Image (cartoon, rainbow, N blue to C red):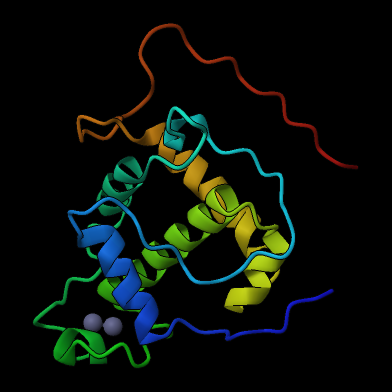
Length: 175
Ligand SMILES: [Zn+2]
Ligand SMILES: [Zn+2]
């Protein structure tokens, strides 16, 4: 049976939740209060798995902070609702860097948790959050790419990899 749509936008509560995840010193005890009705099988990337196959939340928290350094900050020179008033109104559609990164951070966190923590299907997550079709798959690709590029010492990988040259991948062109 299909779950009814709860809502399709990030509410102030979502941001409050996120702040708990990202800022709190406590272990991640609070989960999004959404009950999964269908079980997905997406395999958790090894980088973010803890020893029990769950989500290594401290790692994810650090990873997201590093990936989205402007998330939840405000820019005094920006006049958008968020930067000026700390109001989340229109954050979804604002394209200032602070808003964009905050929205993305929330999306990455939501997808990480619901896909690999709660084992929901991509379709289910997209429906619950009003994401357009394909958002989860696309975001997972981006998360995996970012995981490969992140080093825990905080330095970004630079330039081309050292050592032997990478094998050139063959590209097949559809006729
Ligand atoms: Zn702004
Ligand atoms: Zn903004």
